[in-house]
Length: 342
Ligand code: 5GP
Ligand code: MN
Image (cartoon, rainbow, N blue to C red; front, side, top):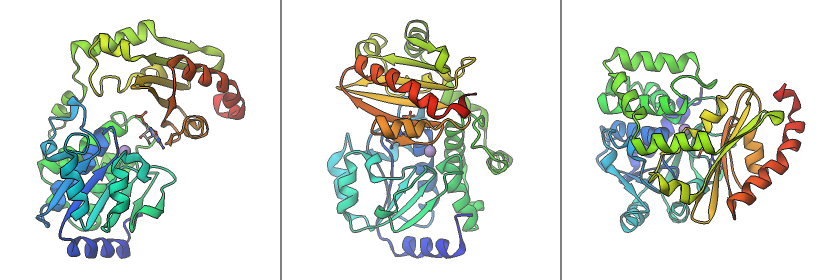
């Protein structure tokens, strides 16, 4: 139980004393960073009249339907506003990230700010040095679930309205692969049951999240048909997409989301990697099953980190070299984690 009575009291004091509140979440938003931000926003605006959401960049199109998403101010697009809001804030929420490096160029603003900072997050190995109050639980499937638990701990479940409910549900769905991942617990289902019991219309949320475009479908088909490489002796598979290939299908932000999971779903494959070129760097996504710690691989070789089964990193240089580096270290990684690959 991370929402102890003492910490909730501290939370209450920080919120009550704050004149200006800013909610932040990590770069390259996903359903959980947006979902937890909007859920917290809809919740605390019921008791606080000066709350802003500042994110490093905008969410992909498939999340724009979310109620309140027009309230998100992206640093990449409206830098001056974000600088001012961060400067004037006296309370900043850090949602769905465990170190200040995860908010891109906003990390300077966070470091310079005198505001009190509250982390609510579920990533492993949180850095405590940049926040004043930390609610961190790597066992919880999503930050959105933690927002529900925060409301529960403050006896505020009756304040869950449609906006809050949809935001919490979206964060849970996207971070659990629709209730599939091992991070799902009875509590996760209890929360979904509670939300649906109170009137949440869940089917349109799944439709909104998983409806695709013709370009995206063709990009996915191309990636699977032409760019998937399986390394059966390592029980691994990888996909790569250069910038030229992405342009060919007019790839939009978020269009390659989930590709790596498709590679992971192959029979006999226990870890999957996706290499995506963007402006001189190769962004790499790692996924694994069971106890295979792809976050170690990301941390030790690709300046990254994350969860045991879902992590990421980057390579500065050419696509071919990034793949070459991965293929070279793969046998050692498999050997070191032999028991998990059996
Ligand atoms: P994705 O592959 O979806 O971009 O990222 C999956 C997870 O890996 C994220 O939720 C995050 O925990 C972690 N992650 C992705 N990129 C990075 C990175 O550059 N650094 C660190 N430390 N973690 C990352
Ligand atoms: Mn998350």
